[in-house]
Image 1 (tube, rainbow, N blue to C red):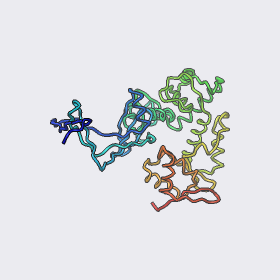
Image 2: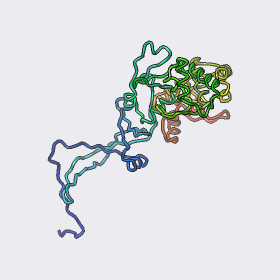
Image 3: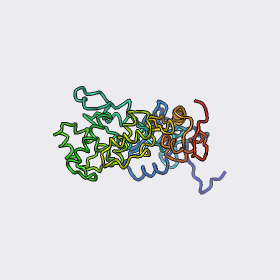
Image 4: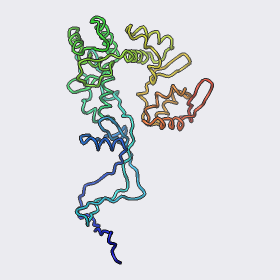
Amino acid sequence: MEEDSTSKKISLKFSEHEEEPEFSLLELDKELQNLLEQNSDEQIVLKAGLDSKSSVLCTSNNTYSVRQLIQSNSLMLFRSSHSSEWTLQDTKYSYLEIEHIYGSITIEDKISYWDEDALEEIPSSISFQDFICQVPASENEIKAFLGSNFIIIKDNTLYRLSPSYIMTLIDWVFAIMHQLRADFSAISIQEFKKTAIADQFDTDAVVAILWSISRTPFLSQVDTVVIDKSLVCFWIGRFILEDVITTEVSHFLSKWTEKLPESCKDFVSLDLLKGFYFYAAPDTIQYFSSLQLPRDPTRCFQVLFQAKSKWLYDEIWPFVENLAVDKSKVEALLLKYGRKQVTKNGVYINSRSTW
């Protein structure tokens, strides 16, 4: 048979080396592909997921779930030494599929409390670097979380301020602000550190308070911060509700308002605490944190419907919205695990089964 003048003969060979490098195929979405192409310094890190069988892939800012998919056809990887000879390097029957998710960050079983008595007996806790390595989330997601949740670092070890200590320090911060006639939009970190030393308060704890009520990133080097009054209102309300667990709405709102600095009282609203309570009765709310829910959808809905078999749509949404980045997927999960019921009193999500 005559060879077509446009055709090209290639010799295919099997590798003669027993110890060849192994390859895994990773499917990139457009966002991640562009990131890696445009930023040669960007690193991707594979971490263990929430259980021993899962993994996540992390960039600096984002987290992706990783799932191995088996292909019906194999993909042959060749190494080309020159144009007419290819050597079979590997044969792949699967690839890794990724999906953008929210990083899962929990601190209860990793970071110990720090309060007024901690200097007398320093508790054991986890190092900052170990926390970064162990938590299935991107580094910047972790830093944002630590910066907004009253975390301090001492000798490269992480601690979380106890709720009672946080309340004490917030009261002190607002007393000093009143004394100094400080501007909420320009709070000097150094000024407060000096005052904390004079008043014998832990400067690291004071800085953690200022970071967390101003949405300042963890370990930030900024000189001034802007106090977010609604954030102050949120934290005080959350701590009060967490302490009492179940309470009448009117009594809780009164107690919450009473505890707040005068400049924050106008922000009192149950909307601030969405995702941290549900209605146990028409006039009674119960503390229930979305942060404690399992990230696995089946287990998450199981816990939700054990707590309450019938939820208003707007009430359940804050507890499930982080199950997927794509909100249409969250809607699909609501309809998969619950039944939607439209009534004159609102839209409800009811349990589909008995758990």
